[in-house]
Image (cartoon, rainbow, N blue to C red; front, side, top):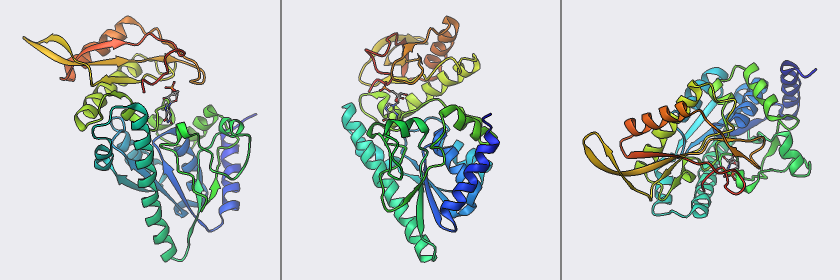
Length: 326
Ligand code: XMP
């Protein structure tokens, strides 16, 4: 007789007991786990919690606004946004190698987060009530995977961006440790969080940075952001969100092909659609999307995103292909 109301009441009591009058910090990634974890902690201790959100410029269209406006409006959470877009672009300039990109993004993320954290810690200490706790959205499957230990920062290196750096200066608060993903979503809905956040499909921490094959530039990000927004809009409109695990949209920035648009020859970039069906992302199959939906996405992207003159479909399962292209 699992009941989200009971779980919320139980966790709120537990958090109050653990935290007392202490201050708490939490990093928001825009994803469902950190959003629900922070909302629970806020429910328990209110403004003793402060959240940090890093805008690394690799977010999807409207994601920052969804956190800054919708999430904050529905929870009342105190939020500090760090605008690090320029910093990430500079660090990524000239880099095309996927592992190199991941390393740079991970490193810059930790740097940025820790600087924001430091400032808040100093502010709180000056105020007489230090920050002693760090919230993490660790789920039950993560606990099992890591051997069930308690109290240590528990992040797969693969997933460390958009999560948090290990930081032993804080005691961890992990209100989702006994929960599965669908239970976390149910709790998020019960707490009144925006559906765009609670229902969000998996999105990698390095964001659009690993969906541009080639260099990550402001122009390439803009092209991909628009194409991705169109694909997502049409998939949602067609009622396909539940059927699709996720659908990476990839820009082949290093590839050009000849096309004809309006009355002229074009030499633009291809966009790849990568819709996959999966249970746990360990294996996946490509989703057989209806042709009319594919046609609508293709027409809209090539009409509305000037630099794109071709849309292609990835029909590879995992293995051998990974879900992401990088
Ligand atoms: P792959 O591409 O390895 O992806 O088949 C499996 C799942 O993991 C997601 N993914 C990531 N998630 N940080 C994350 O938080 C990352 O660095 C990362 N890389 C891949 C991917 O979107 C898919 O759901």
